[in-house]
Amino acid sequence: NGIVTAVRGYYDDAELLLRQAEAIFEDIAQEDRSRGLGRTYVHLAQLELWLGNPELAGRLAASAYDLARKHNETRERIFTSRLSGMAALMRGDQDKCRKHLQDARHDATTVGYVEEELAATLGLAELDHREHKLAAAEQKLKAVEPRAREGGYALLRVDVLNALARVLRDDAQQEEAIKIARAAYEQAWCDGPPYTYGPGLLTARQLLVELEAQPPTLPVDGGPDSGKGSDSSPPSDPRRVENARWRCEFSKYMRVITSPYRYAPTKFIKLLRDDWD
Image (cartoon, rainbow, N blue to C red):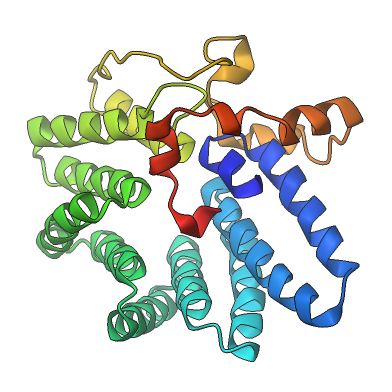
């Protein structure tokens, strides 16, 4: 449930669950412990990237990579290499970013890991953008987007659309940037709160504010908990986690782990790939 909670945009609850998982794996047999810890570190690294903490994300990804290599987990190694690249990009270490992302894309292509091949290409497009190579970035993103759409990689497609909107904005293509940002917002909305892709929705919303455009009006069809109180929508600022770290009241913990995923609409369930289970 930890990464699913993060996907919805509730970062403080997600960290609580993932740290609980880390503690559990520390207490079990060595072989299972290291495998379970590796996947937990992967999810924590992704969470820290969403929170804008590249140093911690990079350390977690490196630990997960070492465990994946130890157990010869090829797909996990590719995943963690990409996360290391994204952490390096956020730190401004462009050479290390390029190496990690190129390695991840090469290995993903070799073994047919399409989602990570596309995700690494997205990362390289973001690197192009950082280096002011707007045409190259746009070309990569426009090549990845239809493959993400046709492959059913819904979360990845939101990230691609947001990245493309940023490139178009900086290339003075205002109307097209607004169109793409609205498409990202709609895709991330899914069934509406609480069944949204929180990080993607927040990014699309911020882009539309910067572009002085209104988000599309979308229906809420989120099941039994939709529209109930402030917890039914993702946080407006992911850094609110800093004010809520390590809140571990029993009642809150029970509310989190019994949250209504089993009642989630089919559309939201399809939004989450096996990699996030």
